[in-house]
Amino acid sequence: MAIRTLRDSLSMDSLWEELVFTEARLLGDENAKEFSPTIRQLMDRLERVRTGQVAAWREEIAAEAAVAEADDLLDDWVHALDVALLGILEQDTLSPRYRRYFSDAPSSIMRLRLESQIARVRCWAESLATEPERVLQDLGTRLRALMTKGNAALDRRRRAAAARQDHRVRNIKPMISDINDSRHALFGTLTKKAVDLHLPRPWPNRFFRQGARRAKPESRPAATPAA
Image (cartoon, rainbow, N blue to C red; front, top):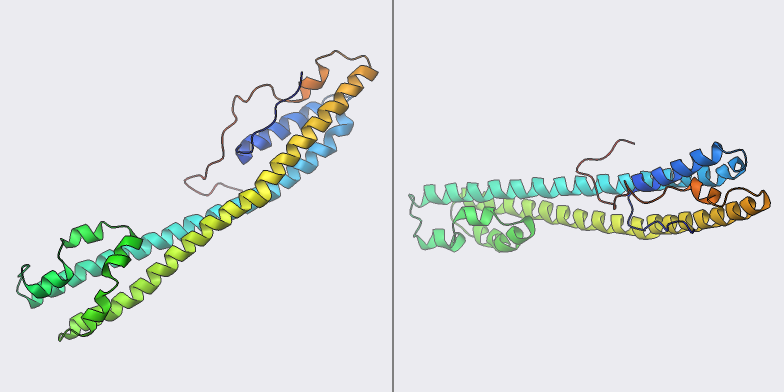
């Protein structure tokens, strides 16, 4: 009976478990222990690839934190503009000057995701620079800095996501393909040895886990796992 082909969506943990099982079974059998170095080499490679994966995850999570920070700072800025305008206009929310910026409630702007919020307030910096009050001019200057910070955070998040995807395509998927090739080659070698030594017919299959009871698809953890 042929062995399973491991899916290329499997998690690093599931792949590691498959290799640990096979190595342990090989080492425990005098007729098969000579083949264990092949599995050890695959395990060493998996650990290197896993380290790269965790680094990619770490950067992506850090990038998400940078986006969240920029989003919070822009929300604070919208609130500050609302307070400044209401103070200047004596709480008149129907004033054309107030409606110039807040045709919708400030809270609705603050609920927007960072990218949409930046797009919404993008032209405000130029308008605020021409307002007569110094406090509004200063808020316009502050807005320019916040948009720069926000756009940088969004760009970092895009780059981090691309780097994670590149690592999977260039490192993880080829590694899983090589693991499958090595497993099938090992199974063929064990099958031949079973014939040569007149071992039980099921003997070659005993070195590979049957089924995928604990196999899980890859997904990024909520927190960076320990090395």
